[in-house]
Length: 95
Image 1 (cartoon, one colour):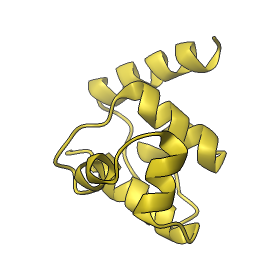
Image 2 (cartoon, rainbow, N blue to C red):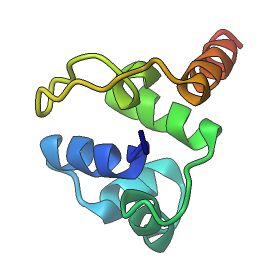
Image 3 (tube, one colour):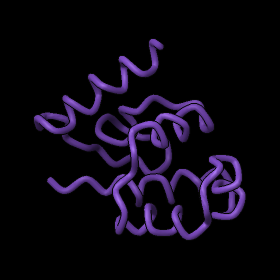
């Protein structure tokens, strides 16, 4: 499965009635950078993903698994990459 984290960020941003400019400013990144992330052109750094989770008060698992509250899709979390990503994010969140 190909993770489309950027698309999920865009859905979350729109659900919260935010523009790309507003979210980029909140994250201290350029609008062009956010646009590339949301278009799945540029992969997102873990620290930035963690900041997005804090901004929207969600867990990082939202991007990989479980019923999300935006559109009800279910994502499979049984791949090695997602397990590693989640383990790293738990370490960061506990710092």
